[in-house]
Amino acid sequence: MNTINNNVNYIDYIPFPDKNIKAIVDINAIKYNINFLRSKAKTDLMPILKSNAYGHGLIKISRILRELGIKYIGVATLGEAILLRKSGDNGRILSWIYNVEGDDLKDGIKLDLDIAIFDDKLIPKIKKLIPNGKKIKITMFIDTGINRAGIPYKKALQAFKDVINCDKFELVGMMSQLVCSEIKNSPIVNEQLHKFRTLRKKLEIMGINIPLVHIANTGACLNYDVSDFTLARTGCGIFGIFNNKINKNLKLTMTVKTNIIQLKDVDKGEGIGYNWKYITPKKMRIAILPIGYGDFIPEICSGKLYIYINGTKRKVLGTINMDQIIVEAKKKDRINNNAIIFGNGINCKQTIFDISKIGKCFPLEILCHIGYRVKLIYKK
Image (cartoon, rainbow, N blue to C red):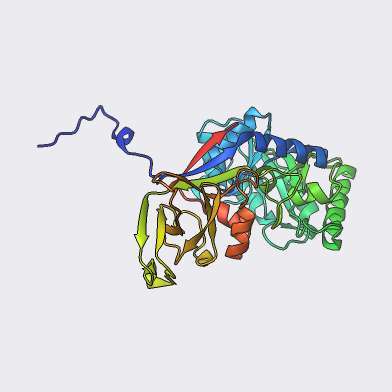
């Protein structure tokens, strides 16, 4: 009869659920990108680590950034901010998506997190949740034209007055989101910047001087003069991603590799994988890799994707499965040989941009879908 020792923490015996897929994150490349973006923006940076830091690992990346001297971190959801705080991050963390009726807002208030108000109607509701004698740091999220979550521009001045007149709020920031900063000299972006600066000027005339003013994302750092603002909210840029092609001024930070788990010889005319979408034109050697769309590779890449084994390009055969792909193999291949799915353009010719082009999606869509079965490894 089995007995349970209540003094033993059995979680220690549960293996990590990865399946020999490694995502190697280059810390030096992150440092380089931060320094470059800071030099372009001529402001301090607030790196945005939403969606698990774009697949790079929220908690670990936050710790790396703090070690690099980053004072402000942004995330999308208050839940992400709470996770960071409870992981031991005691620095400034801003978030702007939450349910005012949910428990996350109450927890966020207790944990001294910066909260962005994205709707002027939320001001009295948030005020009621704050205990007497306590103040929370508030950033006002103003809609300057993107027409999604954000305080309507016409209501912004009154919203600022309402916050200033409440002794439970400490107004620390003003932010907005640009529509298309990847386009240089866009009339839409120029109008947004004009409106944002005009609002700041009106507030200053009213005697409201805001310490942290930010509207620039990675695109604005690269394409616009944003040096008169306090911060730039760089997200994908710190990981070397901007737009849909490699930017020569940024370094890609992630390399993903797995290994061969089986080698087989298959006769001519045999079907490969589900539904036999690929029929062998000759006797072939194939390799099986433990990676698929359940990890991040888009299924739409079936029949088009290549990977690299032992320095050579190999075609992925048949349908991409949830857990495995089958690739053409060579005589020199061996079990446990590395297979690189994408690299930084130097260690492997194929990058995340190549995968996204084949998959007809944005690179961030792939990175944000990197699952828990992929083991993140951080190297300098």
